[in-house]
Image 1 (cartoon, one colour):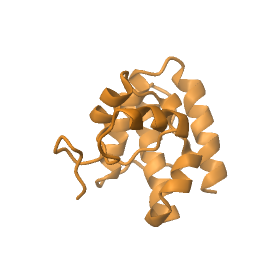
Image 2 (tube, one colour):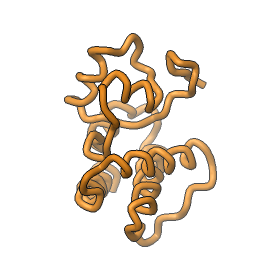
Image 3 (cartoon, helix red, strand yellow):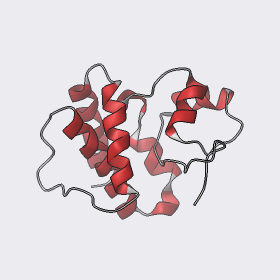
Length: 131
C-alpha cells in the first residue's frame, strides 16, 4: 500500500488540474492523503475540486470498472451525506477502498456550498467518461 508523507494511506481521489497545480506548489510528494492535500492547498477540498475527466485520464492503469466503481462510491457517500437520492441501481459499497471512498464523498460534501449542483455535474462527467 502506498503511503502519504505523513504515514497514512493515500486516498485515490481526483483533482482538477488547476487545483492539483496549487497543491503541488506546497507538496514534497505527489502521493498525498486527503488531509495533506488540503494542508498544501490551504483550504478544505470540495466536490467542486474534483474532475472525473482528470481521473479517467490520469488513472488509466486502474481499469474502467474500478474507476467507475470508485467514482460512484465517492458520489454515493456525498449523495447520502447531503440527504439527496442516490441514483437508481447504485449498490452500497461493502469493501475497501470503496467504503473509504464513501467517507471522502461525505467529507467533501460538508465543505461544498451547493452540493446538489456539484453532484449533478460530477454525475454527468461520470456518465460521459464511464458509460
